[in-house]
Amino acid sequence: MKTLIEPFKIKMVEQIKQTTPKQRHQILKKAHYNLFSIRAEDILLDFLTDSGTGAMSDRQWGAIMVGDEAYAGSRSFFKFEEAVRTITGFKHIIPTHQGRAAERILFSLTVKKGLRVPNNTHFDTTRANIEYNGGEAVNLVIPEGKIPSLVHPFKGNMDVGRLAELLERHHARVPLGMITITNNSGGGQPVSMANIRETSRLYKKYGVPFFIDACRFAENAYFIKLREPGYQDKALVDIAREMFSYADGCTMSAKKDGLVNMGGFLALNDDNLAMNARNMLILTEGFPSYGGLAGRDLEALAVGLEEVLQEDYLRYRIRTAEYMGERLLAAGISIIRPTGGHAVYIDAKDFYPGIPAEQLPGQVLVCELYQRCGIRSVEIGTVMFGKKNPKTGQTVPAPMELVRLAFPRRVSTQSHFDYAVEAIIDTFRDRDRARGMKIVWEPPFLRHFTAHFAPLD
Ligand code: F0G
Image (cartoon, rainbow, N blue to C red; front, side, top):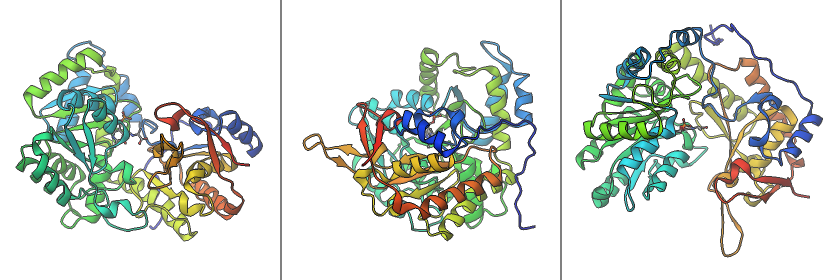
């Protein structure tokens, strides 16, 4: 059969509220054209993020009922620990409430002023936690990873040449090195096993501990199975194990490939670092057998980690983004190619060639998609990453103007995606009528979350 079906049945449904374009116009205006300020109830299809937005299975909900809420030594902790160890093989497994909590603990113990942490591309919170500790977050993705239209099977790969150079010159100032699988900030692009192996070899050569940012490790494992010679007949869990075998530890936001709504962990082999991490955990997250989570959360996570490596699930998951991508490309819409694991990224600069970066084409598209069709997406361009020149007050545009539609796991049906495709194509056909936007108010940091916008006259 050519039709790929969702590999699940729906047992419980959540109603989505229908609104009219006229109502959405008012809602958008009231939210100052910032989609973070819109109530989720007023959204038809919410593609803001794939983080913590997935649907749990009946097995996960069942596991929740047997959660052991003991403060210390909970049975649920040991189930969680075993599930993580089966996949990662790491010695110490420390639960945290989400990914950035693991990052904060790891970097506060390792990063100081003057130190550098390389990665293919640091996620925002990873970068922010490194910088908060005085360090420098260095991005070393391969050049192909920065060209949206260029097709490459592993666009998330580390530029090992540049990494070798950095380590040769500065290894004494590199307290740890990372790689992010998949590379979210670069379009959810995978990293090949060969590249993980080579990155690991380089870090080892210079005695630099290697940590994987593992949020979307299962999606990465599936891409390796699809695209890397020698892995076609391997079980996904074995591919995952091999990826982790090259590293000394990982940080994980289980809100992605843990298939839970909240959770994360830090896993590592170094005894001393683990001891310090647990002490830090006690200070801010909780006792090491729960670390900011309830026993029931740990149960659901243990099941989620098993389900996320099921081949039927990953085939459907990766195919969803690919299917949307194919249809958008066929309509002449530029996207990051090939599509990654968790999202489709539209090139808003190309979508609106008449709207210059200073007039925020990504924000225009995000607002248009909401107002016309009730879809929430997120701008990843000049609103998020643009800077203001302190002398001239002029906006310095971001290198790319992207709009991300990230897909919650196991939440939407094919017709939801067909609707989204139709909405985007419809908006594209009307692109000549769109006007630019401006920022009318912004906070001192992370402006995209709360800034106020207005359409240009
Ligand atoms: N690393 C990566 C690669 C991520 O994508 C995220 C979160 C984190 C770390 C932080 O994890 O949110 O659990 O603290 N990404 C979400 C997103 C927020 O929308 O891409 P967290």
